[in-house]
Amino acid sequence: MKFQLAANPSPVHPELGEIVVKKRGRWQRMQANLYRPSNSTVVTLTNKIRGQFRVVLRRLQTRSEEAVERGRNLFFNETWGDEALWGEQFQLHEVLNQVTPNQAVGIGAQIDLSKVPQAIVDVMLSDNFAAKTAALNNPAINPHFTQSRRCGRNQRGF
Image (cartoon, rainbow, N blue to C red; front, side, top):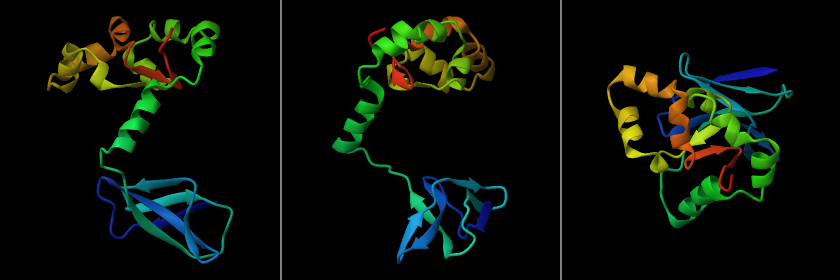
């Protein structure tokens, strides 16, 4: 069942609106929440029709401490030994080098802009919409993302 509550006040970035339910005297976050800015509501799915529910605002982490940096490094650089699976068995690097950057992101690749060549970053951050569109739809640009791309696990070692 879809469950929807008004968010008052509305979340302001970097906040998220989430629905929580009271269980055993404690407020617990529902597993899936979606904030709809068009009508300032938060939506979740549940099979519970009774209980106490409310919207809470949760602030996203905006700090850059040592633990945050270690987590970021782990996210972008740890392969957990999956190089053979993604590189040798699935040939993921071959697939990603034959698609446009738009298509690569569409299938789950993530880009670390701090590792992308500065000329490409400059185009992406410019006001030239035509140049951005051309770059994002050009398969020849994708190999420049090789050291910055992440899809599931990253592609280090391919």
